[in-house]
Image 1 (cartoon, rainbow, N blue to C red):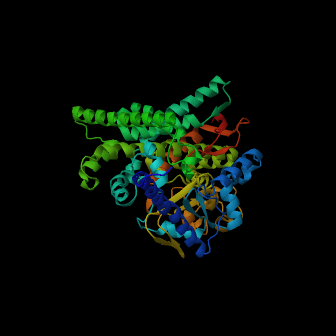
Image 2 (cartoon, rainbow, N blue to C red; image 1 turned 135 degrees about the vertical axis):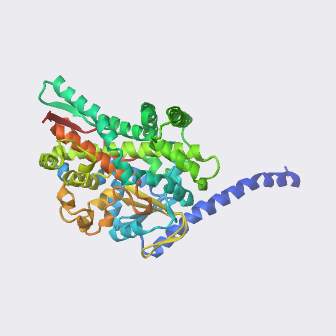
Length: 523
């Protein structure tokens, strides 16, 4: 049977868009990935051989599964505090095989692992906008972070930073010490009640949720002032969103073409709408309250709104999205990571009671009338050293991630546009070449003379990130941790509970997988 020429022409025209699309995909993704990979190989950078389309993902999953079956944290691990070989076993395996710089791929996306202190130091000193947050990662995190300062890149990021950064300068943060102390009182009272309920001498408490509630209260009061009760609803919704996004496929970009199951996608969309609605309701309530009372007192949320209205660089009618997105960012980054850092600090102090004694001795010398004050914060050297060492061993953020938005140079490495750079912070923080032979040990005294004298490359200490994208909430987090730990140590002595199981787990941040359980006694 013969096919008419006209029918053949119609079939060809029908297939033409599909052919054009496939050619576009091949040129955009496959060839670009191959060009980036070839350029890295030409510079002597090696890595595990990838499979077509899936890259090194199958190997990563295989290594992770094998490690999960074989690993268990024993008591001896408290000495080393080394969890990267269990939580991120593929990175550790490849680092041992290929060194501190290597390349790997997830699907058709090419990555460069950089854990060489000299190059991290250079990243720390770079001020270019050509290195931003990886686009595939920020796209997937949009429901949780919006288009706020953590997720944005380029000029839009710079414009947001100009508005947000001044609200976290130290003089502003010191003005929040009072609300931090006030927020800590319910936790202290709850733990006192636990002791009484468990016999009046000692109580076994799981600290994580209590610390989350405390941190949520601090951020809510800072953001919403007298409307802070609404903030607790927002935290509940954001926590649900975080749990939805905590899978590693979000981090590494499993090539599922961006699709999620319909049920999961609907849940994310509903939570996103609820969070945005709650935040904007709180904004309107606070505006109305200020008008009715003629109050000049402004919380963080109103200051951000005022800054966005006065700054025309964000564009017309951008104020609402700016405030909502950055409140979401502040909530997640400021609440979750600080609470987790406090949990790790208490775990380490429980293991090392001599440092509890050191903090109390210093408090006796520094506190006027036995009370914590703004003026005493700068003199709390011991608790500061403990926090710095805890953030070295257990930085809540596991990675610094960047994507080359344009062709750029890092040291002697030519970095192609589209290449993603990753630095594994816990590995860098425990590198014996940087920190010495005791790098795996808890020794706050290494920070006696500050970060600059604590290690060979101070720029390799990066618990709050690197370069111009250094976490804007650094001052806020450090002051809150000082306040919370100082109050807890002044009221209680504590040790690890026999129920505690050391289980660092990656859920967008590195947190105690089964929580931190301690035995507390009143002083």
